[in-house]
Image 1 (tube, rainbow, N blue to C red):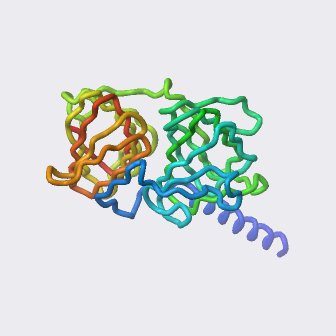
Image 2: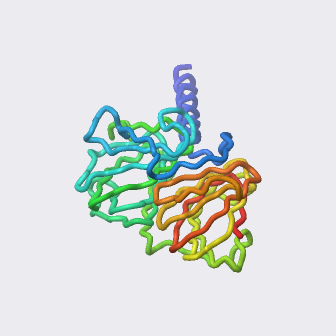
Image 3: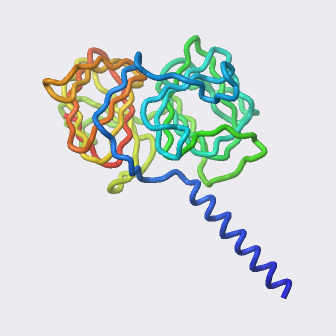
Length: 282
């Protein structure tokens, strides 16, 4: 009887562990519908990323959502030159794109791999790592699909089945407009896929590279569309009579389903787009 009971308890524990890891996986949908909104880089609300460390912590700037709650959120993070965190883990997976400076995110014993602006990385929940910065100005955009975003000691490390990714900007694979059905061939826009699935209504993220002198539009065809300017500059307008906004790196705009954003550029510009479905670029 004791043997049977021990086996039963083991199976229960195994089931709970498997359930925990499955639940820890990043969600593939986002139930919070986006709305038409714009946050310019000079209007971002800033606070400390880790309030317990005060000014020893990087600064965090809100773009959408609330990283302290269990919901999707996008935010900016500023690091001082020479910053290096203690080894730690996060309770949730996050994905990041470097906007300014040089950032390193890896195991504490790994050689520094300084990622320049335009690079991408993914940090799985539970994976021990450090984050360091080496530019005069260092800023990144972070995207989370669940929260709250917490910093925890490495003694609580766990494996959720996901793996870390570090992609230098020179290793991104760009597709031309004539390779992509939802981008007009005449636009000369390029796309790099970052994460997610292109199955119906699944979360995905891409980088759009708009050429200098681009004058067109991006139409959202999904319940959820959020865009962050990574480099360059965008003039954005929802409709002809609406306000025009000059969006510098670190700026954000969201669009509700069916909304068309008028977009123009003076120089080559890269935009991070996170959507729960399709969009069209013309």
